[in-house]
Each structure stands twice: as C-alpha cells, then as structure tokens.
Image 1 (tube, helix red, strand yellow):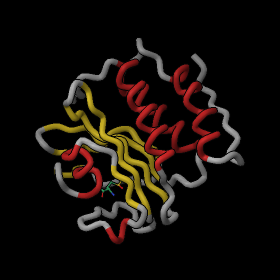
Image 2 (image 1 turned 180 degrees about the horizontal axis):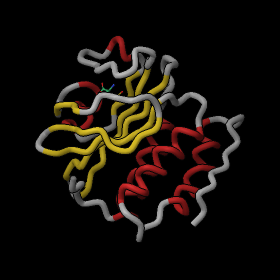
Image 3 (image 1 turned 180 degrees about the vertical axis):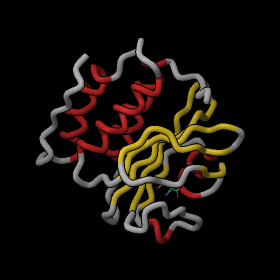
Image 4 (image 1 turned 135 degrees about the horizontal axis):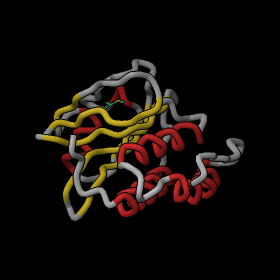
Length: 168
Ligand code: SME
C-alpha cells in the first residue's frame, strides 16, 4: 500500500476531493484492522485541507458516541445520541452542515475556536454505527460539495472495510 497522500492545497475544494478520493482507495487496506484504516482516513482528510481544524470518528455504543481515531486537538470523549451536532446527525441519520456553531442550539464546543462543522453519519443497512465529524475555525467552511464528497468517501470506507459494528 501507499501511505503517501499528495494534494494541491491551492486548488478549490472540489478539485482537492477529486485528487484525494482515489488516493484514499489505496490508503485504506481491507485486510488490515478497522482502526488502522480509520486512523489514516482521518489523517488524510485533515491534512488535505487548510480549512479543516479537526477531523475524526465517534463510535456509537449504548446510545453514546465515543471518541475514535481523529486528527486535531483533544476532543470531547462521549456525546449522548441527540446531543450536539454529532448526536443530532446520528439520531436523524443524516449529514448536518452547521455554518455557525454559535447559532446551533446545543452545540458542544470541544474547541472554543471551532466556528463551523459538518457531521456525516456512518450507516450500514439502516443502522447508525457512528459519525465522522469535521470542524473548521472559519465560519461557513462547509458546503454541499463537502457533503457530497465526504458521504462518498465514508460510504466507500464502510463498504471496503465491511464495517457492520464497532466492537470496543
Ligand atoms: N462539536 C461537536 C462535538 C465534537 S467536536 O467538535 C470534535 C458537537 O456539537 O457534537
């Protein structure tokens, strides 16, 4: 496998995703442990964009989202389903884009500098397994393009690693 990711950060977001997604395919190895792929997935997304200040997974167990592999500052370790942006995205089973976290009722501020956020739920056969959360210190950093490409990347990750549940 190749563990080298190369993107031109001078390009627009769509072009960066177009460079990044095929590289994610070779970075994630189906025969390696789940945690290995998820760790490198977070690192690849985090390091590809100037605008991203945090990127990582939360795993759902007993209605609580527990912090998983991530890149960025230390973060909240446990979030109730329905709470914050992460808990709400998991409950609704849909991606949430929050342009200004200070205007999102119940937002959980792990990093006071975080200004906007996108959360993509991990869903397999209708079951929510967790979420992938991406933060920015810029207001309104995420658009429908981020939703499209992050959902695409997350869905192929789930398929490739055949993620049915997180046992921990
Ligand atoms: N802001 C999130 C909490 C997780 S951190 O951003 C890493 C939320 O409101 O759910």
